[in-house]
Image (cartoon, rainbow, N blue to C red; front, side, top):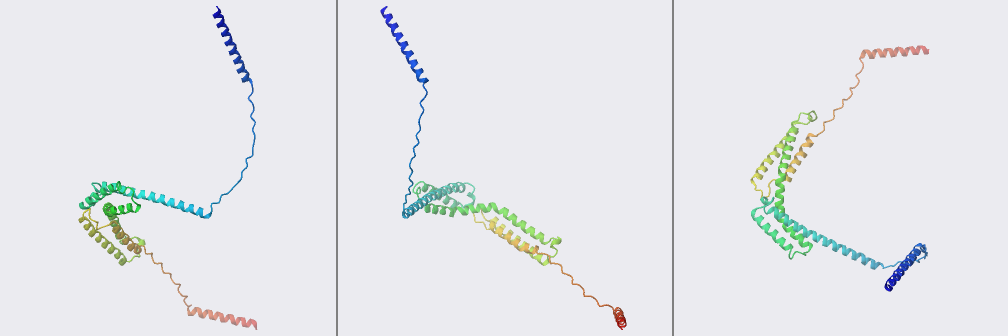
Length: 286
């Protein structure tokens, strides 16, 4: 019984403590928050200028220029290295069984592919950090062999269109020289014949060069180039156009015919009439 009484007293004490704590919390919540006071303080600012001197500024400019030049050299060196690497991969795939294989003689093709392989090995070994000028020299060495091969391919692809253009120009000016259009009627036949002769000469040259080209192999330098065909076409136009575009001569102006003298009978009548008029005037005056 005594133990039960003690427990009841403890429970009552805990309840009283909890009630007191709750009342304290409610009292604190009911209080309004304290207002903060702001204080403005002026901060002093003292301007100052530090002068480093003309010589030091100039040194900074020079240093900046040196760093920019160095960055540019590094960038260009990497670009030249990439140019060599790209050229090796591209030409090796084209010459060694690709689109350019038939435009290179067998001996040249084999030696060129060997050089391309050796250049690739060099790039990843002692050529890893070579100078810009070294990369440029390597690329020049490779192009001295590869460019003629590429040029033969381009010539073979562009030649048919160039031949057709020249043939079309020959036909155009030959037909124009025979035109009966009124705007060409003032062109003399001798001038027209000169155009026809030039067309015939150009066509004969073209046929001869086409025969030589047909006899040459694809891996040989072409005897008939696209540039030569263009020169012949332009030359024919420069010769024929001034003749056919010659303006018509201006029509001659007709000179006015001089007035014919009056017949003798009319002149005598006019003189008699003049004399009678003079006599009448003299009588009136008397």
